[in-house]
Length: 236
Image (cartoon, rainbow, N blue to C red; front, side):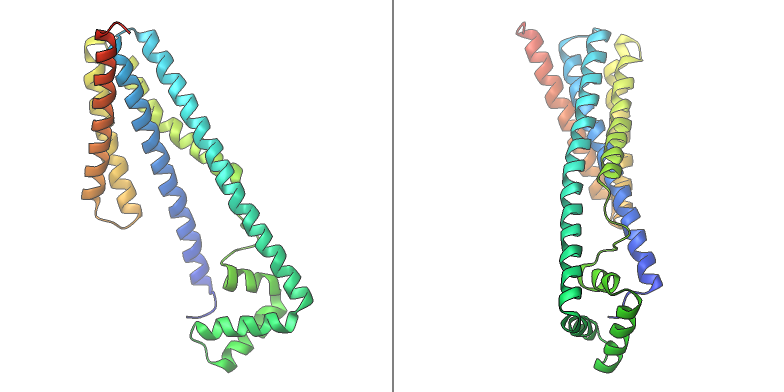
C-alpha cells in the first residue's frame, strides 16, 4: 500500500457519500415500515379518518425524533472519540517527535514502501502537516472533516419523515373502502424500491434485499392489522 493520494481521498469522499445515501435509504425504510404497521394496525380496529391521521402523525413524529436523537448521540460519541484521538496525537507529536516520525515510517513501510522511500515520504508529510499525516495514515481521520452530529440528526429526521409520509397519506387520502388496499400496495412498492436502492448502493444483488424488505414490510402490516382487528373484536 502507499500513502494517501488524491485518488484515494476522492475514494474516501465517495465512500462517505455512499454511507450517507445508505443511511438515508435505511431511515426512509424504517419510516415506511413503522408507520405502515401503525396505521394498518389502527385501521384493523377503526375506519375513522381522524383516528388514523392522529395515530399516523404521532408515529411519524415519535419515530423521526427518536431517530434524530439516537443518531445525534451516536455521532457525537464518534466525534468525541475522534477529537480525543487527535488530541493524543498532538501530544505525542509535541513530546516525542522523533518516535512519531519513526512510527510513521513504519506504517508506510507496512503499506509496501521501501524503508528509504518510506522515510523520505514520512519526512515530507511531517514537514507539510505532521498531525494531518498521522491522522490520515494512523487513525484514518481527516481533521477538517470530523463527523457532524447535527447533520446526521437532520438527515435521519428527514429520511424517516419522508418514508413515514407515504403510508400515512396512502391511508388517509383514499375513500374508506380503498384505504387498506392502497396503503398495502404503496408500502410494498416502496419496499421494493428501498431494497433495490440499498442493494445497489452496496454493490450487492438486489433480489435478496428486495425479498427481505417486502417480506418484512408485509409481515409487519399483517401482524399489526390482525392485532387491531382482534382488539376491535374484543371491544378494547
